[in-house]
Amino acid sequence: MGLVERFDPPAFLSDYDNIPGQREAWHKFISECFRASINAQNGLVLASGGGPGTVQYYNPAEYDPGGVLVQQPIVWNAFPKELLRCFGRTRALREADRLWPLNAYRARLPRTTPEGPGPFYRPQTEYCEWHVKRAGDSQKICRVTFTSEPPEYWQGLFGGSVDVDTDQGIAVLFPGDKQRLLDLYRELVSAEVELEDLICHEDIILADGSTYLAKGQYNPLNKWNTTDGIAHLCAPPNSISAEVRLGADATILRNSRRGQAVVEPEALICCAAYGGPDRNSDPTIGAAVNALARLGAMVTLPNPVGLYMDHIDLSGWTAPPGVEVGECVRIVRGSVQMVERLVVEVPPESGYTVSDLKIGGETIEYGAQIAECITVKLVGAAAKIGAVKNDPINCVARCCIDTNDPAFLDRAVGLSKPTPPGMKDAFSDRAAAPAMGVSLVQTTKSTRYAHAYHGRAK
Image (cartoon, rainbow, N blue to C red; front, side, top):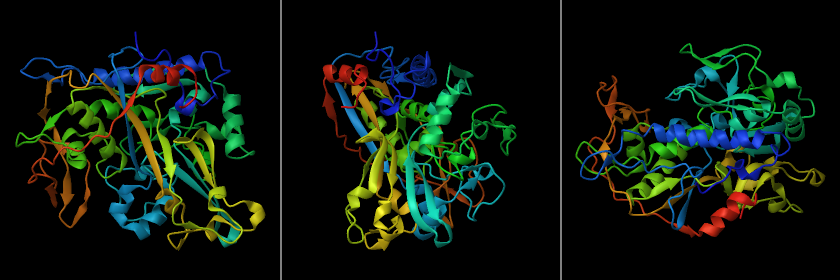
């Protein structure tokens, strides 16, 4: 019997509550995400002393490791580190607020501003995205809306098949409620939204010829979630299934070509070839989960599985006379430290706008300046620390850097592949870094059950 009887929606959101079979479909979806991720680890793990090892990632709906569950909040900054490394802060602030054409999505960011026809996505790849609303000709910022809601949650509301793992051909069927989906868009984004606006009217094909979205499906890149507003995450890497898979991949212990443990976040992600090495999120998640695995623990993601805005730091913010900074920020969906939707807006009756606020003495010109003040998180959980004895396996890949631009890592390439022209292998002359410290917060089993069954964050 597992720890969790049924997975709840992220932040215990209630949109599924009155749709027959919907919450059961979400439970199955998350459970299948775990199952597919665990299956991908089979055959990779070696036990200490030889032979097959123990996969250290588990599905809490199917397995209870017993003992005390230890929780590890994993936090990172919401500002896209990829943009910062690629462009420097001044230009990155501007680029982060823009929409990019989907055909510009690549492993390595372009050095010129990407142009082209839609559909569009937001280049905000830290599991936190935002939309800036400006006032007409003045271009003053009226409102900045942030979200960490996964696209699969909204696809489930639309109904039909929601992919778990396309490589393994796994998907889950949701009953859905298109009227509830439309009502939610109208409540959160605009009263002008029509159901037809949310549907793909033709296949969306990527540059490599693969189908990104099929005609008739829910379209997460619709105008009300890109050009004209924001409902949920839409950047290609920002999905809950990717989060679950990354957690599984990170439990595999790795050795460098020198036979030393690989633990430094960027070196580890390059060695194992999962996620984006130039992000805040993926290397941080991978290193923290890997640290738990090195302790010999069984690792999982506790209920409710989700990505959240954890905190917005308002220190250093100043407002015009008569305006309190705290009244300019409100949580719209989720709860404190489990925020799914957050709005920054000066009370209209004050006569001021967000552009009249300052952060560290800088006038707010971009939503990205606010993102610099936001931390995003997921929570890992460990049990049976010290019980598992697995041997590290060798790296399968490495990252490369442009010798003329050494601050930016490319996506990992296989060890057997040649180094691309003009590039140099990264980390090739570095010994393993010292192990990162792990801050653990113990949680009793009774608290776990309270979280799982009473439907409220604690």
